[in-house]
Image 1 (cartoon, rainbow over the protein chains, first blue to last red):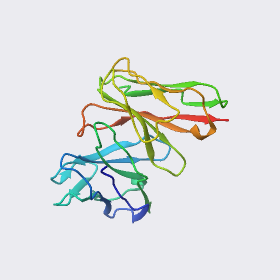
Image 2: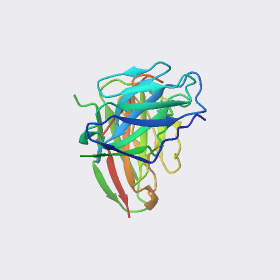
Image 3: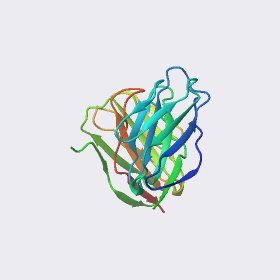
Image 4: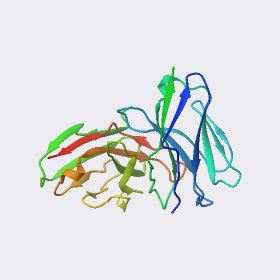
Length: 109
Length: 113
């Protein structure tokens, strides 16, 4: 079963870049890597996803290692509104998408 | 745009009683999911459905049942609630496997006394 490992928490200063790591050493060749975040008292929201190549969108960038055993979510300039729990998820067995505990990001002004 | 609608927003329930959490989506997504989130923990998948008429078990299915009679609705039923089922429940949907973005509802807070 493909699983992910993330640090429990990270801190960043406002306006600085943030690199959130995720290890997924047992990823299969067809698993997509998804990232979601959950703001306080809200449901999770989609951030980005990718398969092999690095991906960019208006919210973040996703850097995927060449062997696909790890990935990094990059927030280019953290704001206070980016304080949230960030989840790295792999697709597992049909649509059985399982979230771990995620990384709690604190952004300091 | 409504997206995912969950009801009720919150509920207090006596142990042993039954309860159905409702989830409706208006995006015609094939896949739907139910997660629970407990204080300080991430989301844990209870049940999911790839398409109308099919369901599957997630990480923590015991004590819960689901049905998927049509594309839009995916109710979650607790037949006999226990205090350990006190949690925030999130429903979600996605259009496609693997690549599909998950859209979440606002959550239903359930307290079982």
